[in-house]
Length: 281
Image (tube, rainbow, N blue to C red):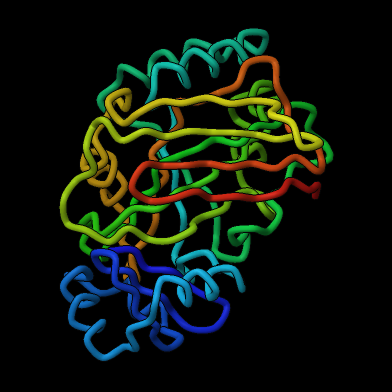
């Protein structure tokens, strides 16, 4: 089932049938265990609407499908990411750190964003004015319950300043955490089953109406399982209202940097497409 956070109200799609519900307290909702069962029961009390009406509500505007949950992220979980990070940090002497973390037992996990720093679908994600090399990072993003259980999935855009991170790995927080540094959406895919390894992740960046960069990968290329990443995040941490965890990127465009006015589209099979324009901060 797919759960959409509308500008006004909530939309739930269950096996092709659409239900329109009230505005929800998303902290309370995502802080519950057994979310798939809860939503399946809740839908029986909502208004059943046609596909056409559902599409109209979506066109009116979507919000990031979250409350005030924290977003965390995992790094160097794809071989492509390992290689790109080693290349960008070669001059600073930090290249070996990325190679080591790729093969280490402990993954790289870092804080990504508070809710106030997250852009809604259709809104602008940001690049820093003090950065000269910026990329979107398409990532399968996990919705985790307070107990650390994977309750669902969404699309995340982990905006990254590669010039800042490449200058020195210790600058990672500045390269990753700033206003407009992430987006989530367009919905939550709520299910207990794991996504197939064949699930595709695609990126397209348009500039002046023309395709400027693209890439594709799939979950089979993810070195660490989502369950493994989630278990490490919950070591020494607690999340009373749940949290989100971006699982890393396997798409890093070569010789490319975002500019103001670009349009970014990230598609994950079974979830949908997250679209954002690009601005500066």
